[in-house]
Image (cartoon, rainbow, N blue to C red; front, side, top):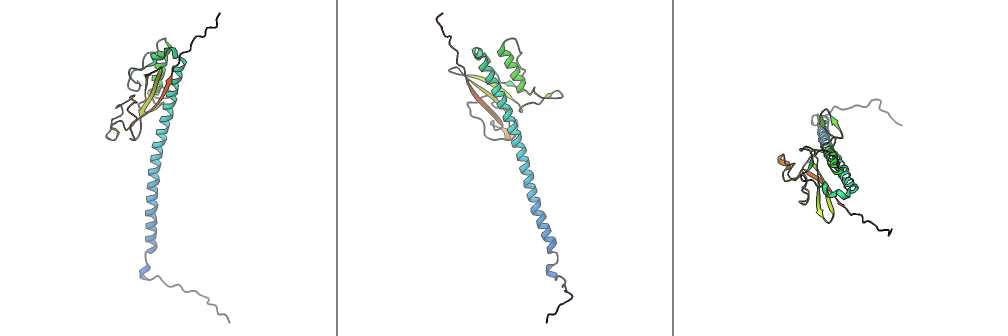
Length: 198
């Protein structure tokens, strides 16, 4: 014969177990808050990395722009050499009438961010963008675009002098640790006249 108990009797918690649920909730909140702080730090680092990536992409576009300008006007390539870095912090050279002076003027304005304007400020490119063209011999020209990074990393090689010591404004950015630079080499070969015998 089966007997059924119509009522289940719950016993009250004893004094040793009182408050353990509240303690478990507090520990869970502590773990959750630590996780959220880690997520906020990750988000901050991702924004810095995104800005660095955007600036590098802009620098590569400007680097390619000047390389194409020199290649298109290779007979006057030597006149593209910049005695001082073009870009932020200097007055751009006048456009003039020669192709190379027009190119230098337009490249300088692009380095200063003329592609996008907010009010009267040019905000179109990298922070503190500077550009240099150097003759390195054997009909080769090194084009460099330098800018200020957000956080310190390693300095560019000493062979890249464009913008050197220009971005050492804060204690964490000394010794060129905030300077970023991309370079390319343009080799200019002169076309030879072919004598067709006529």
